[in-house]
Length: 186
Image (cartoon, rainbow, N blue to C red; front, side, top):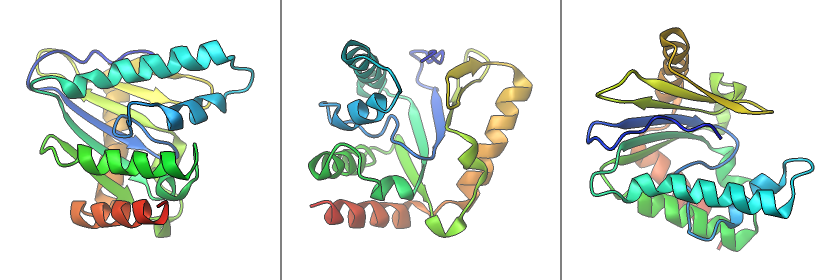
C-alpha cells in the first residue's frame, strides 16, 4: 500500500470512509481479521500475507504516539455483521474499536444499512490533513490503491467524505450499533 505522508506533528488529521472491511481502527495485535481479508487476494502466498499484515500493524503505530493524529472513520454497518476470521476474531475486532474510540482523538460513525447504495460504495479512502504540507488522499480500488496530493482529487475525495459523514449515524448511535454487534459475536 502506498503510504500517506503522515507527519509527526500534533495537527495531523486522518479521515476515512471504509465500506466493506476494517481499517486502522480494527486492531487486536494478532491480525486474524487482517490475515483473512488479505488472504482473499487471488494467488497471494503465505509470505506475502505475513508481510502485508506486518506492514499494516506497523502503520497502526501512529496511534500509539504521545500525540496521535485525530482520526475519524466512517464504516458501513455491514462490516459489523460480515464474518471475517471467525466469531472470536470478530468480537475482538469490535472490542478493539470500542476501546479505541474511548480516546477523544478517535471517532467512528456507522453508515446505516437502510441507506442502500452510497457514494462510499465506490471504494475506501483516507484523507490526511497535514498542517505543514498539502493534504493528501489514499484512494483504494479493487486492484490497487494510490496516494495523491492533487488538490482536485483530494477535494473530490473530501466531498465524498462529507456526504458520507452527513448520512452516517451520530457517534452515540454508532457506538450502540457496535456494542450490539459485539454481543452478537459472543
